[in-house]
Structures are given as C-alpha cells and as structure tokens.
Length: 379
Image (tube, rainbow, N blue to C red; front, side, top):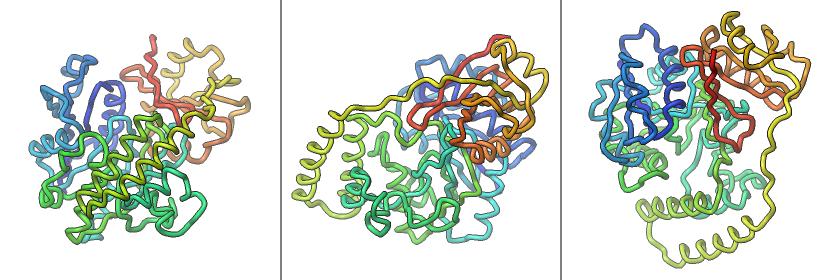
C-alpha cells in the first residue's frame, strides 16, 4: 500500500516544518510513503527556508495562489501513491496515524474518506473532526449554537454529535485538515471542486463521495494536534464565508430556493450585528508559576538558558506549581505519547509546548481560540 502524504503550505513555513518533522518521524524507513509539500506562492521566504532541508520530500512551487482545492488537485497529479493523505500544515500527527488508517482501510472496502480525532493546542477535542451535511437548517443550528441544546437531528447534525468523539463510525463529512482517501476514488469524482477557493471544498468532496456509494468514517484512534482551534478568527468575515459556502454547497447539490436564502441572510445580518456588539472576552496571557520539561538532558540544558527555573521531570503528574508550562522534547519523545499526555492532562492548569531540537523551535498555544505560536530558541 503506497501512500502519498500531501501538505499545502502558504506563508506558514515554521508550521509546515514542524508538521514535516512529525510526518518524517511517523514514516521513518517506510519506502511505501512519499511526502509532497505544495506551496501556494508563499511570500514568507518558504522556498529559501526549505532549500536543501528535506531531500526526501518533494516540493512543488506554484507561481500563484491557487486556493485550497486547485492546489491539492495539482499536487495529486504528481502523486504516485495508491492512497492519499491530505494534511494541513498546522498539524502534528501521531506516530501510528498512518498504520491505523491503513489497517482500517484494509477492513473496510466501502470506505471513501477516513478522518481522525483532532485536538487543539490545549489537548481539547475539536468538534469539526466529524461533521454532517450543512443544509441551511443545520447551518442555522450551528450559528445559533442550538446543537448544544437539542441532541437530535437536524440540530445535532453539524458536528455529528450523535456519534461519540471516542467512537468509530460513519459520518457524512470529514475535514480537509486530515483526510485519508484512495487515489482512484478521489479521481473518480474529479478531485476537489475548484469553485470553492478556501472554504467548503472538504464538505463538497465528502458529499460527492457519498453520492458515489462509498462511506466516510471517523476513526478516533488516529490522532493529530491541529493548532487552528475551533474559535479561531471568528469575526464578521469568518461568518460571511461560512454562510456563503453553505449556500454555494446547497445550490450546487440540492436546489435553489431564493426566499429561504433571503430569509437566512436577513436573520444572519441581525444575528451578527447583535453578536459582534457584545463585549468580547479576550484570552489573557498565562501567569506561569512553573516551567517543566520532559526529554533529553542535552536539550534540557539548552532550554535552561531560556527558562531559568525550568525543572526536568519524567511525567506531568510531577508538576506542583500551576499554571505551568510543560515542554515536550520531540527529539526524544514520540508524538503519540505526547498527544496522549496532552489529552490526559488538559484543563488542569498545564499548558503545552513542543520543542524541535533540529530547528530549535518552540511551538504551542495556550487557548483554543488562539493560533499556535512559534518561538525560535538561541542556544
């Protein structure tokens, strides 16, 4: 089973670098895996940054920003694998992710797409790991958060909350941040619809694959960290894109019904005006009382110069001063273990960082509504 792992980079070179390091660790010595990074004409120096850095990774440098779907379609043309794994650049994968997907695929001939459990930088579950078809009524329940109150369809359909987050099962829609799919299935539906420039491509692809008679599956044992949390950048532009994408999808696959769209848009404008005029609580910086490190002694010594009170421990249970920053050494720990520890110690006054010794980079976030932050360490 040959697999092509495809990562799309656009002005996030450090995140892509971290993602690559987790992927390379997971597929070490596996000749049946190729890694492709497609760059959507980044302007942050990505090309120079990656020049000669990863000789076993294939880089595609596009001459313009093609958007999400078209860039992936162009990369798939270059892919040699029988299976494709699409990954967002702001993700870190568990070491056993690919093996879990492959074993599941071998037992389920009817599969179209397999997705996994995504956790944010705080170790909390991201509900977009599994989703439903966003009809206007389903989208309405998501916007108004009625899905948190009524646990029956269509109100609980957007995040497929009828399926427990720790339970494997069939779901209609999987996120483009993590998709495992047969290349022949992807090609049979002509790949991503390039009319969707940045949002909705994954929903559309998931639905068209269902229409072909395949099943999409959620596999919680396959875990990743996805630093772009559920509440990231939820401003007026986000909600406008959300509504536009919903109706773009609905018009394409169902039927046009202008009165419904008009009423939904009027409601949306009123709802958004009320929501954005409310006082927003912004995340405050954490006042750390302790700094802890799990990993190699040499890397501990390097970070000790940055965090004077840094304590080396073997397990998060040894943390005594909270709130605490806990730094994981990715050079000596596997990502599966790190992710499991984050899930175990989430919401207990412990905030997590990943240290990448090869690039001397710290990566992490303290809140689900904050994007991941990158810090470069000087030894």
